[in-house]
Image (cartoon, rainbow, N blue to C red):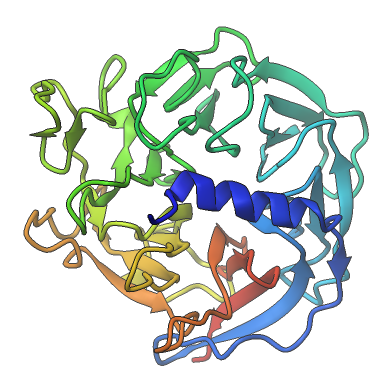
Length: 380
């Protein structure tokens, strides 16, 4: 009997936990496949690297599968050796977000805040736990992703299972709160594992990339990417009782379920995402075709045939995807930007996790198979 996605993730987490997260000097990278006119450079290695966030001075912050957040100094320039920025009494601390005056991190059981000034490369204070998540305990999806937009702090908390009725009110939700962690409440519900959160810098919208459930008809449900802030109230994403275009499962009602604006093939597993600024003017700004669009790190999965890890690009026109969802073809809205992670025999050399855009226009991508962190730039 095949293992569920939740169990596979747990086994991987256990394996990584046995290896104390540590940073090492960058080594030769995998033979990545990029569109013509781009080049990737491996600038660092951080074991268990997950979500990324770029600081105003060009430092790159890295969440991990362990209990530490790392920083890669001058990632937009010479890229110094990565080192620990802060350690936490929690793990995994997979998500990090650099805001104007604070660094936020998402652990398994809490959302944390560290006072920050541009240029800080070591925490100036002990991480403060400002909100609690998973009060019902561990199990299932263990990562919490954080993002800040327009004075609101968001935290996505994955489900405890593949398909079950949750008793923990923070599970399978995107929570919203003040930057101090006050007034936490659900901003989206029945959203199985919204592990990828991305803020569109052009309008402040917050998008979630969501991994769907298993054990349905092969190839379903599609993975989704949707603007949770575009919906009034507390939108319901239908996990457990609905799939795809409001299709009921076991007689569930789907009349009030959100219809997502972007879909990916089943089992692609979105882990990280970032929007490319429409007005990018940095030295390494991408061509106009990429501006305003979204890069989404797809981790791949264990299903047979194995779904290849990759980074997808979704083109946008203003606030909307350039192409509408086609429920007969989940591959029409995006193109593969980074490939080469999986060979024909199913063996892998990389599994993308985090995505971030540098102040100079560089694209940063992390992956947790080898811990590589890549910097991608146009070559012309």
